[in-house]
Image 1 (tube, rainbow, N blue to C red):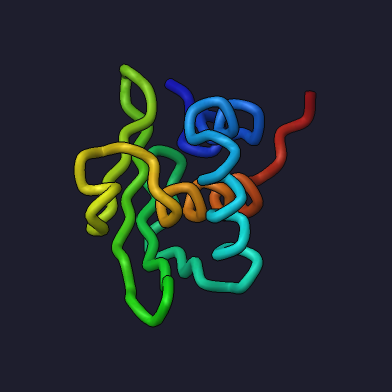
Image 2 (cartoon, rainbow, N blue to C red; image 1 turned 120 degrees about the vertical axis):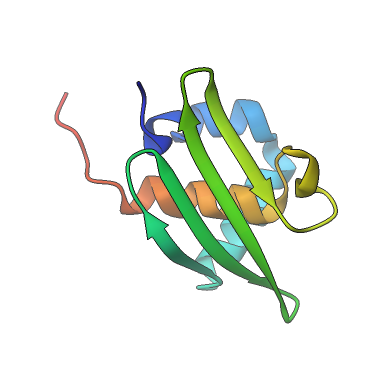
Length: 100
């Protein structure tokens, strides 16, 4: 099974989340607003601060692919939002790099 980091590599994330959400997520990540709580190959949880509000995010690698949850209105239904996208970007940057 693929890890969360494998499922959120930059090209795949851009395709799944779209350019706008990738940019919004990158702004949050670059500003240091993503705080990883749990970081394992199959599950990542984070708190993302956005506009003074804290959002809880979970990304998980499952047999069927990536699942996500955020407590914001957009991400509550399991779709990408700025917070889950920021968490995905942070996950990719923090994951151990594999040799090709």
